[in-house]
Length: 329
Image 1 (tube, rainbow, N blue to C red):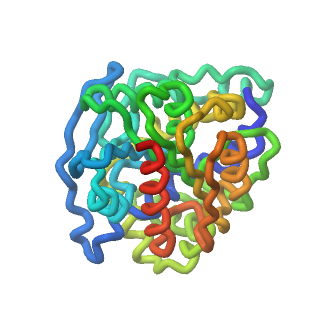
Image 2: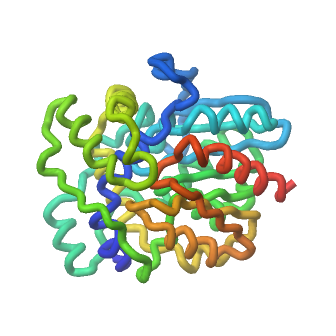
Image 3: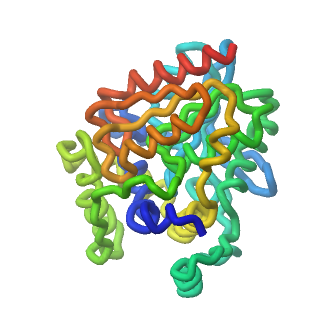
């Protein structure tokens, strides 16, 4: 197993899903109207049922949005979606396997004691699927929708999947945007958040309240966000779908997939890497290293942003997605 897991994954990735669950699932709405679900469709691809939403017309191409660990499609800020649609892009967002409304792989195991032993011994963890399989899901969805190429955009684990897509499926990827993600290289620093799950509780309110306490320490302006706002955002994702085994299997996939250092060196599509300077979960050095490995990639430091997309940096992110997409045309 790659040593990056011991440096970063062990302490941080267990709660990556929480950051996304609270970060920006429809900030364009200022009331409970944000809980309205857009039309959601199901595609049978790569042997799985994948839930997706489809917006706009592809006058300038199609953008595929890939979320992070245990995060659902609704976690993509609607302002990002509509900003891209207004710029002439068709936008597809979807639930990864094992989360949201996509197929739950109930028959597959979850990591246990043996996994921990193998981890300590530095052995392969035997995950039932890996990030490569999730990248294959994404490509299969693109093919199902009869799209020749997409501008792929991923955050955190979604950024890892997007990187794999760009490297291994170049005929399907026109440009790459990697947000608050990583190369998983061994030398990168770990975050500063000390995660304590012992006080999370078991019922809905205890889980959400405990998560709010943790998320407030994830960097940037999330620390000053009103508690009721965080609670409402977490509640939306929790109530739409809360499936612990899927979260565990996705984490298992990340831990067992190794780094992408050599893979990133093969990417030739126009690429941009964005990272929040205040990210306490995956420090910005991870983003810098990712950009260094991709030939010609642009790195953008997002001031004041932690491991989530805030209102101040949202327009910059939309502009950077459009800018890198335009380079492929």
